[in-house]
Image (cartoon, rainbow over all chains, first blue to last red; front, side, top):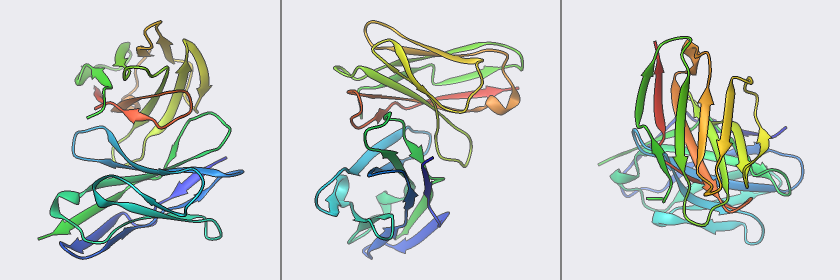
Length: 114
Length: 111
């Protein structure tokens, strides 16, 4: 079975400061990892994904994520946070070669203060 | 915005009733997945359809059923509604096992 843990329910950061949203995963075989963002009363918006290759993945709106196989982590990062980044962020995993069904974490609320 | 649309936006039903939710996939996508997102939780996989066939199913009872049509649009049907079925239902479309793109969701309230 595959699983995702997002250890922080909420992350608070001041605008202009770097942000990190943490994610660890468990999956059989090689992972296929995703970050999605959800704004209030909206569906999930795709940010970025890791399949293979470079451990640092760049995505939409200046976000990036670092894959660490030994720590089974895929933390989301941004060098300089914006107030408009405030939203709910979900990490998801699936096993390569299996169904494309995604297993999501519980989500982390990111609050960026002015 | 993705090209995935869902209808209706909101729905209120009473316990024991049946409901049908609809999803129109993004152009060129042949796979549709349905998820249930309860309040304060991450989305939970219900099932997936690929070229009109069920391609995988999560831990949901048989009263949750679905269809995919030749144009790759899809329906989610829930019979004998229970209070715990109240949630945001999300549809995602993809090209086979590639990245899933989500619609805005249908908010179902069961009274």
